[in-house]
Image (tube, rainbow, N blue to C red; front, side, top):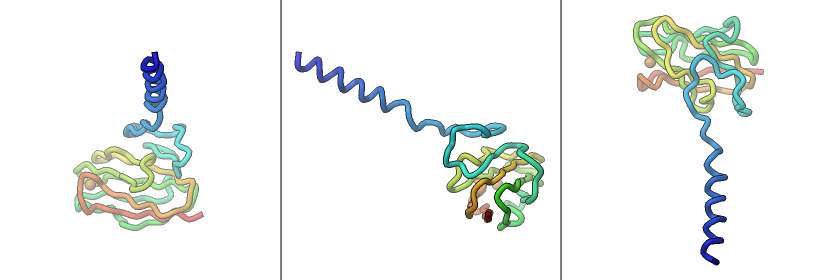
Length: 134
Ligand SMILES: [Cu+2]
């Protein structure tokens, strides 16, 4: 009898832990409205009129490499070349696009000031920085 009781308590603890912390799938067309309380912006194919533009090129660069925006402005990444890229933020995975195929765009509207480093995960060394001021 002592043994049976211990088993029940243990199973309950395991069940309770299995639910939290698994919301990390790649965003598809828009991540608007997800419950990411810490997300510093809104991302999607179209989130507004772009105020700042960054090209992703066949030279495997973001042009310009460093850019600046204000809180509330929309930044648009365009793939102007013929190979696929990604815009992958180091610290804001909620704003990340899994892939930008040639001719496609990705937009982020930032709601929080900060310096956002990002990279293309396909091409090592293809990095960029965006500074968002309030
Ligand atoms: Cu790339």
